[in-house]
Length: 170
Image 1 (cartoon, helix red, strand yellow):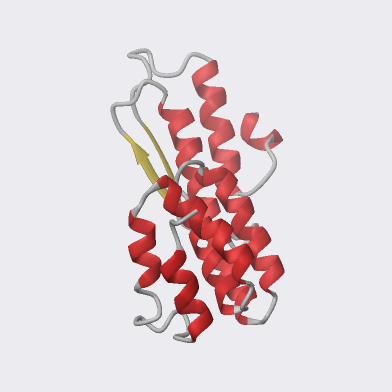
Image 2: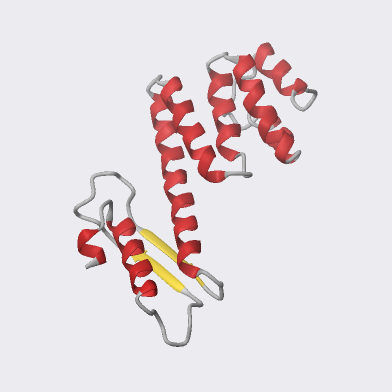
């Protein structure tokens, strides 16, 4: 019944079903592990694709499945943001990365990548704010970002290189 009444893609409906089964009594031995595996969802047009998440030895495995599925979804949104940026829609791409950042919490990878997209668009003040947010959470982001021009992911122009040298000085 929970599955039939649930909305969303296959993964969402399955998570709703797992939670309902747990609420109805679940495993007599208690709750310890859970798996979410969606090979294909022919009824979904959201582009989220398959899901394969396993949680072992956790006090609340269904909640952990939900958390991991949220991260999976946010990572897919991040990929879509790069596609939008490639078509020139940097504002939408940055907005999607900011949305992903709310899910990623203290992991500031979406902010770091949004700063890269802004640097590529020569929007250096905005880029610096987001890059420094990431660097403030983990100093390794400064080194990571500084390597991107040599990797061909950022231009080697003076403005970009000056910004990269200044990161972390705020």
